[in-house]
Amino acid sequence: MSDVPLTMKGLLVTSFGAPSDAVTLKTDMKAPVLDEESDDILVRVKYASLHLGDYKISNGDMGKLAGLMGFKLPYVPGQDYSGKVIKVGKKVTEFAVGDSVCGQVRLGNGTLCEYIVVNQTKEKEIYKMPSNVNFVSAAGIQCSLETAYQSLHAYGGGMRDGDSVLVLGGSTVAGMYATQMAKNVFNSKRIAVTSSSE
Image 1 (cartoon, helix red, strand yellow):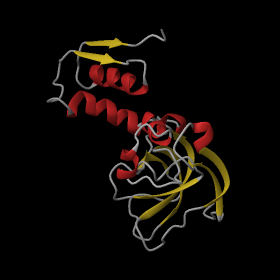
Image 2 (tube, helix red, strand yellow):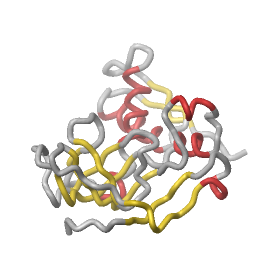
Image 3 (cartoon, one colour):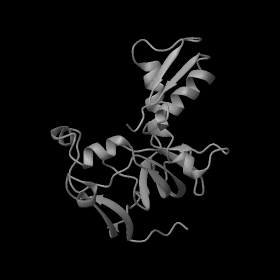
Image 4 (tube, one colour):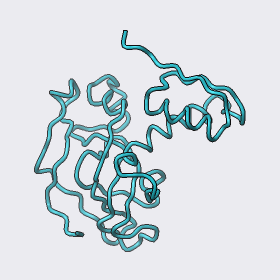
């Protein structure tokens, strides 16, 4: 299974604008090549997820900020992923071929493709999947869970044990994580508010 084809399928953002115009399915993208002397890891992506940031950048809502963040067309969208390790560099010590993994890559490096290369020393890029989490769920954990944690704990002085919390957008993925975290980590009373479609 460590044989990687020279090309792969993936989504490619070729211009900033409406997704129907800006995003293209490519079947002949160059597959990443692992530097065998490195601490890099080649992962076959099983599932990947899109987040609001992916959409806002690709449709041009973020304007010049996309360029300042290092986005250069064309690029592969997606941040979070789950998959299987299929090859490791010689300096990799924490992962092995066959490991089920998940993580988050920097915006613009893209996970909506068949193969990605991640680095074991870069924070958030790769984790071993917990045995009680499936590949579908693991592909959507990182960004939303991080957003929920930052909203509750990192900003504005942070929550303390027993604090009450108002979760706006409680039906979003980040909102559901925030609600669970408020209850199970911070032992808080919780109120979840969602918006209607009207």
